[in-house]
Image (cartoon, rainbow over all chains, first blue to last red; front, side, top):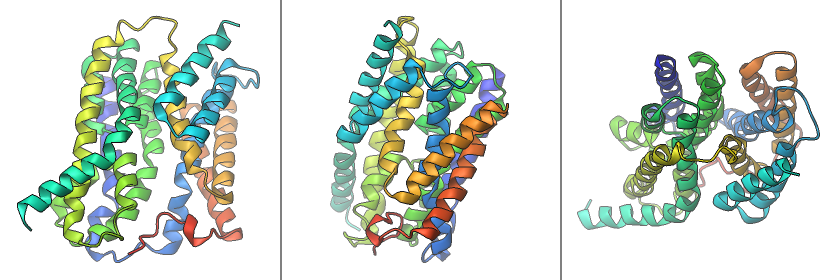
Length: 103
Length: 243
């Protein structure tokens, strides 16, 4: 239990620091330098793929290209790509996974 | 600054964020239910939502804790997911340069994907800088309240979720929801591909949850190099304030 609260404290300190990093200096920051922006722009695709891809390719902690998780993930990716609806993607992804697991 | 204008701006911000609640509420339910189904308890769920207040990272940290990982590894997983907040902070900062530090710190605590998305598309066009913070707060506070209430609702229903419902699969699904729209150009494809493959390779060679950080850093480096090779058109560069 205390490990969970320690995780909350550490996660919160780091998260707030990232949110505040540039806002804290905003008064002397006319603009963020272009090279810094170039690096920052890569963060969303890189960081999000780093968590999604292992969850789909190694759902049981070993590499496997034929899993219900990967198939359901591909279906969900198509749904979010076409509709941009978070709710629909969550529902379709979950239903697809349950259906594929019972095949 | 007249009070009616502030109220009007608060309402405008809330109206802009309102349609996004359709996605936020189910996500909040999962953030509330998952710690309960992992045996961490409802107080931890609410603690994450109030103190960390960053949905996807909460699920990543809970995932680590639920599988027996340490607090530090859980925090590293959360930090990795939240790296993108650095981008939002950098992108909004030039628009808020006139605000007091205290105001900017409140904005920082409430900064989310949704609040960022509605503000960046408006600021720099509408140009009364005094009206930016009320607009941000209108959207961000509506989101904050909805997130806390849906977390609590998730805690209450968490224990009643049937075994067959793969709630843990909501974690990669929520990240997919953020990932797919983030792939906007060739460098982003490179960043995502390298990030994903490096994370898998890292996990295969035994880096555990640190493979997340390995993947993210590799993807960022690869994406930056790709952007130097193929510079994006100005219209694709969403982080540059247009004002």
